[in-house]
Amino acid sequence: MMAKRLGAALAGVILLMTSAALADTFYVYVNYNPNISYTTGIGGFIDANGRLGTPGAQYVFVTGGPSYYDDHTAYIYRVTTTGDPNRHPDNPEDPGPIAPRAFTLFNSYYMGNFCSGHEDDWYVNDGGIYYGSAPGWGGIYRWDWGWTNKTQVAPASPSGTQTMAFDETSGYWWAGLGNRALYRYRSGMSSWQYVFTHPNLAGDHHDGMEVVNSILYVSDMTTARIYSYHLDADGDPVEAPVSPYQDIIYASSNYVEGLGYGPNNHFWISSWSGFTILEIGGGSLIVPTPTPSPTAGVVPATTSTGAIVLIVLVSIALLTVGASKFRG
Image (tube, rainbow, N blue to C red; front, side):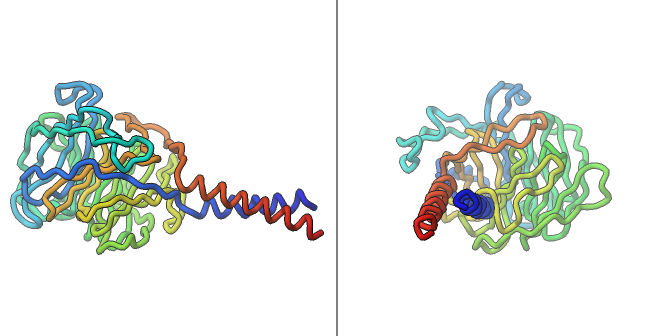
């Protein structure tokens, strides 16, 4: 009888564990103003093979210019960090002063006059530079290094698109609409496919999306919160929309316009009318370094609040079993 009660109690604990997101806190490491007016699309790149000249150099790609119609320019900044990139006064796992960051303009590229930079985003890997995907820009396009050989790789995503990301494992491009509906597309499909709608994260609308090692990250524009979901080998979300894998928070009053990943293995945010770019990360659930070739999804180890909750629930379950035994 005791074994049955113990089994039932543990089953309840497992159910609660799988329906609750792992909580985590990230830290703001830099809030840099590059003086390029509105900062809209953003993406990161760790240049392992020296495509831009220096193996191991780290870069941020960001769109600067108007908030809507007018001339848009792509800027590439090399990011150099002197010291431990995760060190932060508020980080209990790596306390101390923030290591200095230096931003050096590597080059820039005129994107054209279109609407609108805040509806499109960057993705960069070892194979080239990608930008899109809203109707105002006309889809997702790829360039070789040196901004040559511009080629369309995906059609325009649905009207209302605010974000773009790519999952190298499944080959899906992702697009997020302002109403938080998420779509995907890959070569061979006739159109973009609706996947799911993520919850309201207490922001005005959806803005900010990235995929790193088959984990999808989404945010809202006027919030400092990010939800994450595992993607399986076929590109399907593992967790239900209301039960994300991670619930990440950080302290910032800046808008979230674009969300990228790269330098220092941290996330990078463009703040639109704040005219800045932010670097966030350093929490207990640090995302593994992305690789330029497709890789299987990686589940990071955790010592976060989710693990503590599990321990508490197990303790409660065992105490309940023990009390039941003494009651007969």
